[in-house]
Length: 61
Image (cartoon, rainbow, N blue to C red; front, side, top):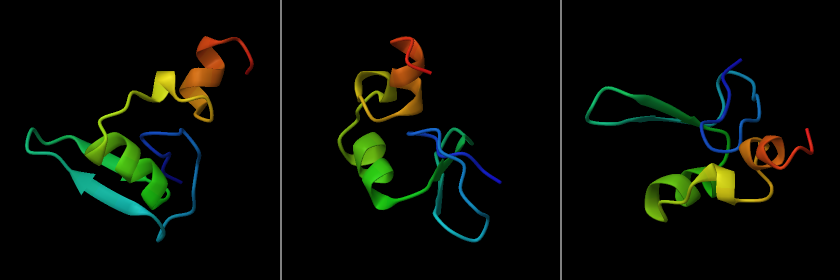
């Protein structure tokens, strides 16, 4: 099961999106909300409250 590159949530295979960057890095996204926040808007997951990275940094998980 892949994990979303933005929110950190595990999602079943066959769903979501794969995004290939020009440097060869592969990004997985569980929903379009995550894709838009990272790719289009350029947001850092650690600064968004509902992501796993943010909760971990604040000591909530």
